Image 1 (tube, rainbow over the protein chains, first blue to last red):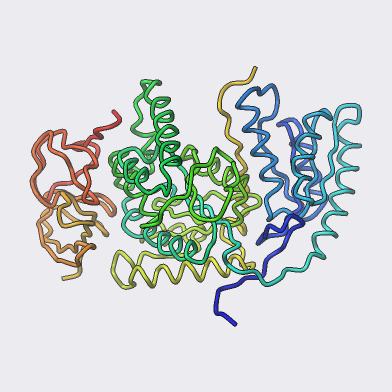
Image 2 (cartoon, rainbow over the protein chains, first blue to last red):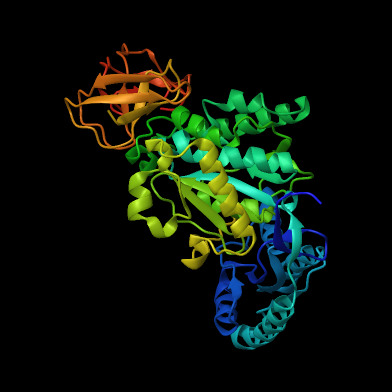
Length: 386
Length: 94
């Protein structure tokens, strides 16, 4: 036999593989949050994915909302989903989108029923789904079936020097094994966008990248706003980063020397394996939500100053090379690679440590963000509602 | 001497303090690309993670990091000075 790395994962009805086995309770509007949270309180382990949106959105903003919520419900880390909305049409649209994966889904409407009756009915269904999920047996899965999102956050100079190159070691290894990796943060490529453009395997996708990048840059510049403090963030500046270009060069260290297969719309699932660029902002909770919507089952996040974000359905492995952060915020950091700065460890060793953490997490080790209860679910909003 | 500065490439204008550095301190650094070593004297306090100029940079001159332009000097910078938003600006975004 071979020595390819494997993990114990959950094979879903549509053939995709999850590394977690959640029952999701998904409100379709902000005012369904209360019912979803109550179901989650009654049914131990059912995850309420609360968010403030889903009303009076229209056009591309509404399309993105549906793609994000349906995508997260469809994520292979979710075994079954309960959808709670105000009225039947958009609620059923979301439930039907998730049901295309073949997983069990049920929808409930608050209009004509109210909170109490809806909570009882939805909680009974969530209980049934918890029993169902608990009997799904994990099986041996080849590592090539992992879909990994990579992100850096509250970055500082240690990110570009050490933690992002560590991620690159794992990205290159995962791609060699045939896995799927996605990265994003369009405007955070500013200054290094030409390097990313040159990495696309096809001219068609390279042109798509240039168009998407230019549109984002023009949008930002059209606001004529002072960006220092927003991008780079105040945290980045405290950590020593001075300009967007410096931050961008640190950011792109995450993909190492890998070539890119194509460009994804926000929340769009990659059409094949390989490395994919998703057009996103750099807001950590938003990007992790969009990666989850695109089917990422594991996220790797470097942090310099200490971002604490998590995601309700996808575990986030956090690594940091900042010796102060790994000491004063140790509860948030899954992997300390500060030895790279002191040169007590080599980049290859750091890469092996992170690969080991990827395998352990895929095999069930809970990440710091999961244990600490970080469940940030943030569907992005493109423009104001009608 | 234990290194206190790391730089990415030999042509970089600045390096990163991997620990707090005090004004007047003579520190050693390593270029990660080729493991070459250098020493310089800090003219300012450089906090952990902040940049120190490895050579003089004229006002308006590009500041090279990762071997690429990452902005420009908004005022003359001497070797050993703290380089940050007070004397380094983006060439792309204001």
